[in-house]
Length: 584
Image (cartoon, rainbow, N blue to C red):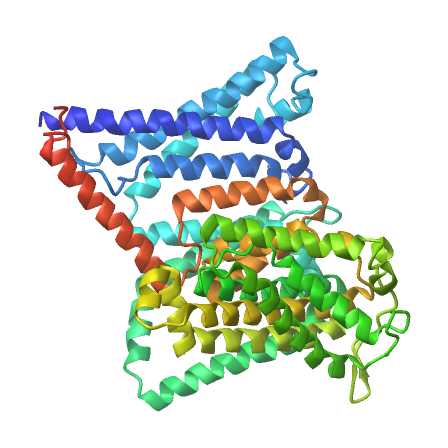
């Protein structure tokens, strides 16, 4: 029993550090203005706003993390105290930090230094209570979050998952109010829309939030405790029946995708179209970065080439004035894309890692500056770009508007995902995988790395140019100012968030990083800040991404296991806490 206090003390020291981190993160969200700006979007009308939800969720996640045992630590001793006490300590310390912020504003009013720290802001984080009860209220709330995190640790894993899914569903319903409200109105269910959402407000009604929570929780509990039986029953089905069920599921998803624009309306079709363009680019960059391991920060160059090549071939006011049909011009754009990929890939064949990233970043900026230059203005229009790009027509059908353009973009995404999946499971994909893991070893085993690098660049360029082609007809014009570095950063971010080398991860990353900000356009000034916070958090909590490929997941977790074994052996060799939890 002598090792128990030392072990618990170690957890408590870690909890104090995490509490300080959580408090600083929450304070930063307040002083940069995210909390007061996001509070304008209620999630549950009259109860919970998005502004307060952001720091609350951050503190809850960090408090829950305080009760977990790091991989490099020995097995805990002394019962469940190490899972219960540290989350409460973390929540308490974070609450003290936010309460101290309210005290600072009340006593010193530091408007010159912290202009976003206003009485309205402290009223939000003080839960509407006046000073001095506001600090006590936020301390009590954060401590309650620590208690909730401790309860989550004590709960059975299946019950914990069901509870987390239920809470996340309620928050999601409140967040995507524009999506669900429009869908319900399109379906003629204005009564259900009125039940779910307050008229004239953006948020769930309290009774709707409670109803959704209870329903999802019950369904989640039933699935968590009965789902394994359903899965076993499915696995016992004959192969033909399983194939029929699988194809039936695909047919149902396909039917939903076909009727989706009629259900969600033009605004959300526009949003999904934008997500589809980034999906195409994500699939292409996933080949370059995720499959082949070539870090490309100038991917916007291919996007620009596709957009301008389409504009030159189809627009009547372009320098070529060929007025070519879009579907005839598209194969030519793909050829130009492949050539561009080879042209950019050839000079960087001998570069790796950071050097490759810096050079490709330079290529992206070179393309943008050339499009802006007076030298090429007779061809590309300079800062004014190229206008009057006609919408495509096929069999008398004119694809004009977001609801019509949804279908060609959807077909391009499906074909791109199919091609990407085929390449990943082919001999080419295995060669790329070998290059990504160790280029020298791959070359020593007979893989022509020069050939496969150029193939990765050209294939990724085709995907990027396809996205640029659809982008040009989507907005009817192209301008170099819209082809900046942020496009490359966004595409790289979504494949990191979703999981490198994973097609499913690219889809999830595109909807999270592109689709969600489109629904929250009023908070666009914080987009880069949110990107950075999400990526840092992902690298710390889930470095393989949300839906990683099996190979990538094995690689990262095998590395963690090797590091854990090494550290344990080192601690044992010096008589450290690897044996008894007591200091040497």
